[in-house]
Image (cartoon, rainbow, N blue to C red):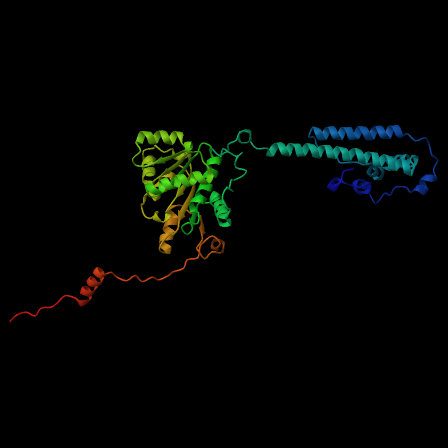
Length: 386
């Protein structure tokens, strides 16, 4: 018999239906009667046919009649005639034969139950199987362009020393709109490159945007991202105000990762040059500038008017001068998570260099000393003549 919950002893399977009012004759009573030849073939055939019929009914989904075991049949009575006949049958069987038939019937019913359980499990599996539209392809209907085959993992580079705070911040930024506040020189661009690369993998046809407020910063970020994650340069493009509109349109069609100023992004969204529905990740450098109606804020608003399925990563060393300014940045950039570190943070200290201040007094030259003396003396006051 099978183990676990399906395991039953003979008494657990069959003893429950024995009525207490009509006990089975004891072995001592049975021995007092004259034994006649045992008609076992008839009993066995009836048991097998009953099991087959019940199994066929289970397969066909039909309701089964109440189970009647040998023990139950012995105890069931409907009148004097039936009682006498049943008692006579019992007397024909000795204890060993009775036990043999009961065990056979139990095994047949257990096999039937196991078959029915397998059929039920099969039907349940078929009911919860995902829709062919979702399971047959690589892309999820709820997230257009999302490659589920590559989304089982996310990539973090090991070609540079692993810093625990960068690893944690990168993972958080993949799944939430995050404002990263790190002191200068502690790897904000590195974190941005990690997030950009993973969205580059997850959305094979999506667009990744990195915005910086000035052209020199834009050029600097292109080189940094290429060195960190190795995104092919043929998939990257730098867009500035000097790039012609027609050329920008072609680049938006053929490239996937874009580095540009927010003013250019606003113009391309307004002219529908930028395919807003394909934008999946937006990185905003110097995010503390996202105040009022600044270009960063306009970009986010225009994107939200066309799609809600894009990630925002905001970077800043100084998020704001006061809590009101910080809250305005959070609201304008739809931030839901903040990663804040200072030079005093435990996971940052190991990567910062202690600074010492030394005061050096430089003496003034002759020319500067003369000017200083004249300044200290002040203008000469000549008394007015009478």
